[in-house]
Amino acid sequence: MTTTPPLLTLRDVRCVLEGQTVLDGIDLDVQRGERVALIGPNGAGKTTLFQAICGLRPLQAGSISLAGQRLDRLRPDQIARAGVGRSFQTPQVYASLSVADNLRGTLLGQRRGGWLRRLGGDTALEHGTARWLQAMQLQLQASTPARHLDDASLRALELGMALATEAQLLLLDEPTAGMSRTQAVQLLDRVAQCCAGRTLLLIEHDLDAVFRLASRVVVLHHGRVLADGTPQQVRADPRVQTAYMGAAP
Image (cartoon, rainbow, N blue to C red):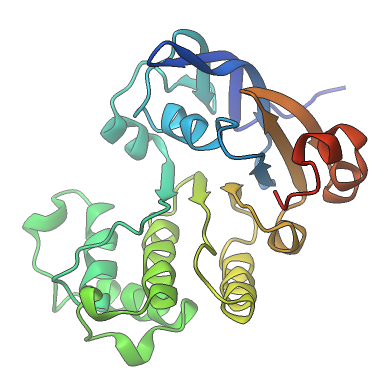
């Protein structure tokens, strides 16, 4: 019987920060098309794991591979070009550019020549920009400088930029942070629609959000994998309940 190799593979990943072991022997496989939520108490190592995958945190041991290619030997820009896209806890956009130009710039970055090409007058580029403005429901703010967006719209823009890269793997770091429940539900519904068939790894503290988007949940605790399963299995796991001591993940 032939099995499909995972898209993302972590083997015995270990990271030490200021003398403290933050990730301690992480093994993780993410299959193509999976939506995996990474949860855990504060200090569990979630963001460090994202940084390691993106090349922003060196490993003291282990390996990270995307579709068989070692990522832990590459620079962050090389990892991005290899097919890893990311959103951040604090949205990273071009504050002085309009919403539309942020998306145009992302789309241009996928082409040979990137920013050397002009932003306007390209039919395919304009269609792509319009597509992502509509997908993230930002049409009415297309000409608004990103610095003037509210928090929900800013997160929607950054997610749109991450999705527009067509990356093989998308890392979403607390995509609903700071949002109302209604805003969070709307944004996650948009992500689900736009990411059909895409591979997602997301950090999320809101279990309701996890249940809404993820097909699988991995729990980190003290830098190790504590539990791994469906949202229902993880929520019922007594080890997870003990680790959180009644606190929302």
